[in-house]
Image 1: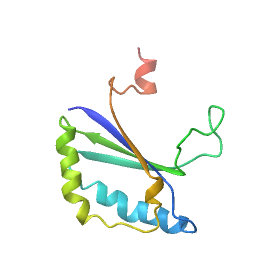
Image 2: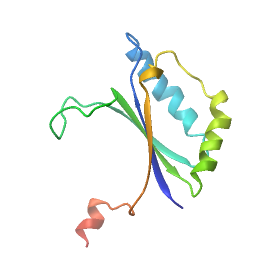
Image 3: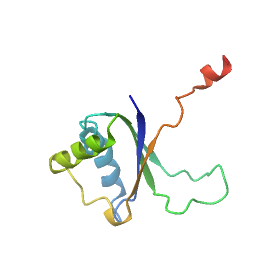
Image 4: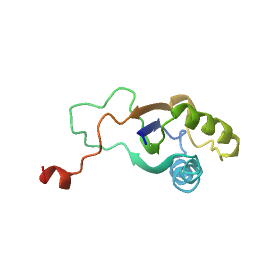
Length: 118
């Protein structure tokens, strides 16, 4: 089965960061993991230290990385559309600034342990 990641770059609404983080952790991520094919999610905060110079254009204050397994992303997309009405949304997110992107794995996953054995 093909592996994908769906990345949502997000910002809290002004003055609502604590509410936004709470909603992400306790509501949005658990809701999203009900989508068929969604395996896991990790919620990240933009680090003050960047490994390369500068802050990337369009970087969100937060990023959620969803791990997906699906041989038919169109079917997965349709399932999301069908479930959106059941999700609990929050006014603590600045929807106008949200950016999303989906990637499909181009290689099998390689861990440090596996790499050392090569």
